[in-house]
Image (cartoon, rainbow, N blue to C red; front, side, top):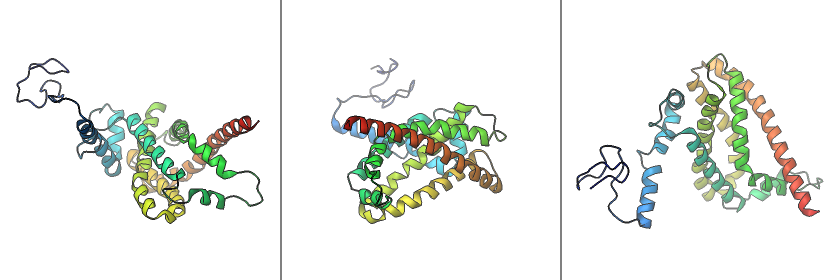
Length: 255
């Protein structure tokens, strides 16, 4: 018997190839085997996804610095981790727009001036359709701010700073998984979650950056106070650009 991956000779009793580590597949593919493989690859306690998620809370410097310094097999690659987090965020957005996690439409209307003829609800719905593009567009801006603020803490280049936020930004998005069942059971808590999620994300990022760049408490407070206005500035630029595009498409379709 040979390994299907590297053609190494194996014994019938072998479950894995000792040469390449590939699993020996003896049975035909079924839906059960596909589902089992999915769970084993991404959600088992030994999977790289779970190990990465846990390590980013307990030792984020090990994940980020390790990857930048050449460690590749210990944790999930940053862009794969980031894309998976975007998929989770997309699932959350779908549930939110369908009303499964609270009355999102009413919450948006509460922010709108009754005399304003512009339909904010409709615009926000269309912006949410492009949310994944916003995430991708936001990543290099965060890396740019990081490169400016942490120039004296590391000699990392722009791409290496991007790695930092691919991991940390994705980690914050994965927290949505914890919010989904809570909001499903308590939909009236949507507006509370919306207000609390922003300071929570800021505190988490401050914690990640403190560990990754080995900063003192005073340093991370100063860096955070500088980071937030720069982040809001770039965020508003991106949102305005997306809003202009959405409005152009909207009024173009109407005309």
